[in-house]
Each structure stands twice: as structure tokens, then as C-alpha cells.
Image 1: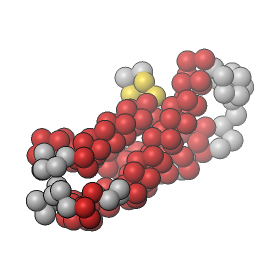
Image 2 (image 1 turned 30 degrees about the vertical axis):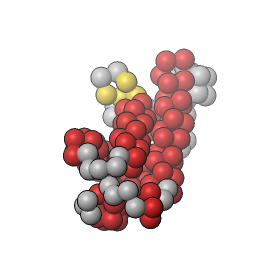
Image 3 (image 1 turned 90 degrees about the horizontal axis):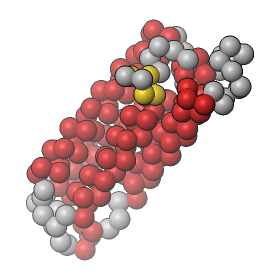
Length: 157
């Protein structure tokens, strides 16, 4: 990145999108942790009527990977993505290693979003609105980064 003042303006859109991703994943993580570990959502799994798509998705076999609820992976990934984006934004010169790690993680997040949308729609035949918020926001952030931000701020070094 160049040191010119116009390039150091705070890019509000990507930070807002990252904020949405972190907050949404934190809410989903809280919901999943309370349910799976403390049985605190709608009291008991036996009495839990899956009246909404979100609850049905949460009870599916795809809701956990290696015994950890999937939103926790998302929360961790979005926090790391934010830290790497801040490092990219604050660096005075192009930092290829940070840029490569950031782009690899971002592409991984997009791939997982596609996989989870496929699982929800074609395997479970359900749509969780909170999950879709994360997936669509991930797509918007990736498009913003690769189409606008990278070409304007990073590739012009």
C-alpha cells in the first residue's frame, strides 16, 4: 500500500462486513454452545420441537465437525480474517505473506459457505436465516476485496 493520504482513508464497507460476520457467528456460537453443552435452548433435546429451519439445521448431523459446533469455526476464521485484513490495511508496503494468508483464508471461507449452502438446501432442504447471513456476507466481502479493495489498494504498489 502506498502512503498517500487518499489510500489511508478508513475503508468502512469491509470493516462493517467483517463486523457482521463476527457478531453473527458469535450469536450462533452462543446458541450452539448453550444447546450442545448446557442443554439450555428450549430446555431439553427430547422436548425440542424443530419448528424453525435454524433449529433443524442446528440439530442436523452437519452442525458439528470433530465435536465442535460449526459456528465456532466461523467465528475463529472471521476473527483471524479481520486481524489479517487490519494488518494489510495498516502496512505501508505490500506484505505478500499476509496477503497470501488472508486470501487463502478468504477463499477457504467462500468454499465452506458454498458447501454449507449446498448441505442446507439439497441435503437438509432447509434454510437457516442466520447461516445464510454469514454465507452471503462472506460472498459480498470476498467480492468487495477481490474486485475493489485489492485492485485499488494492494495491486497499485
